[in-house]
Length: 451
Image (cartoon, rainbow, N blue to C red; front, side, top):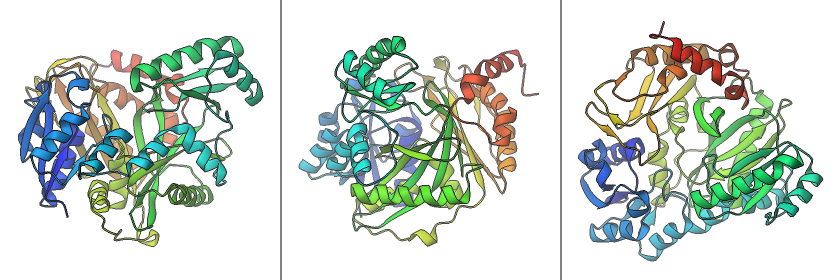
């Protein structure tokens, strides 16, 4: 097992990894930027080293600088968390060259599965259902129009690199296609340094369902059930839940088996997710694989009692999975709300909810300065219950108890969301925010409290 692990990340995921390493009696080395010098992860890690200014390109994205720190401090491995370098094949390759374990899949797998078009083609060759789309990348507007005519509108222009909803644009006709194509390429170029795009048929108002997978380096693969991630704003997830309410037992079984097969086909060997879109008739289609730990992993942990970060570290160290598929059982229900900042500044007062069935992942504290340099997510609130309704009611209670003053957040919006009839019934899909978002925002603005 590793003696010392460097954490190439910040915020709540850095703290989550530090806690896990402490439980495993493994030392932690945290790299941080000047903007994070007073953060809880910096205070909590065994050793913390500043590697540059607030700008991510000069700190958290400077792989060479991070590797130099790892070597100098005698680290056996690097955990990238999510975002930043977590799906950077070149960084993973450099880790291997310098004799440091990248806690994730091999750089070859990151490269292969991180490119969405390559992943689609691999799955298609092996009979995994994929959304109909272009056979290759689209390098001109004329080619985009030609492919869209073959596929049929509406279509989705999609960046082959990266994730997080960037580089994705919808087009419902040829007139919209030109602008969608150019905008998607520009956004992808700015976000990932790669403006390559392809076209998919747009499945109108599907559910976004992802399967959590866990695989070791000895060919063993299990899945840990699914998560419904359909409530999104501009392709950014707002709320996730497990298991997916209303999914038939037959579809659940088929999707689980397909996710495992996809992992086997790719030769996967870490924690990851297989993502599907599911239409109204429960036909499901592979859209991509995420080769990292996900933001929403706690809802799966709550329902399965499996520590995914710990398992990720075990697998990276070459250990065999200590479980088979029959050992995995999903118990109860869990919901996660992301609390995002709407402004920057100092947290004047903070109180997080607690009690039975409530878990909070955050690195905030009273007096913390929320900076404009990084992702806006401040905290994740996860609630669980024996029934879905119990988990939802606990989320309402948790959001009522949350006190966060000095910085504007979306907490009231998330609270109002939990009262929308379609959400309570579990019948929502990816069109939810588009149809109810304005109403939810208005209700949050009109509310003086949580009554």
